Image (cartoon, rainbow, N blue to C red; front, side, top):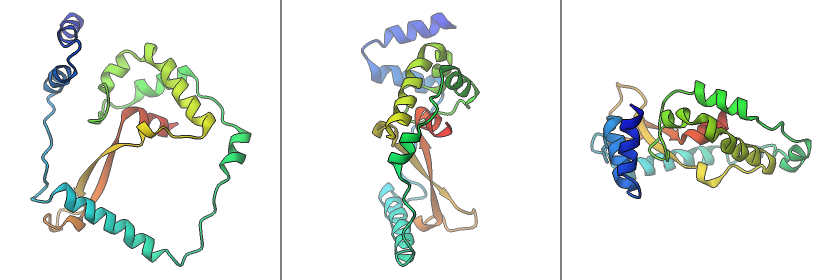
Length: 174
């Protein structure tokens, strides 16, 4: 089995599109449709933005939130995460992927011993600096019908379901 994958990967060296095409084929991934029940991404974007604006409008008279003093929290410090914890979390995670992941979760699991020191450094730097990396702030958002009895042709009857990258999800678990 390893020889098969080594040969496939070697064949795609310097051809990332071919590599992902092969991996998606092996994983039996299908490209998602650009529309859901005739609704476009633009209509969902407008509906979800409208929901956010409605919440903001309805809470404008509310007292302001208590702002957490990040500097004070950072001076107290965080306990750094260790490599063993990252390895345990990676191994226990479900084999779910996001289209934005640079590698499938099963592959990260397979090379967890090699990757976990780098992942640990990333996580500890994020905790130390109080910064969630911009590259991890992306997710694939899929509309999900709230109830099967609702009209699927109305974008307001959907809720957004976010699928973050594996590393982003892992950082949030900690």
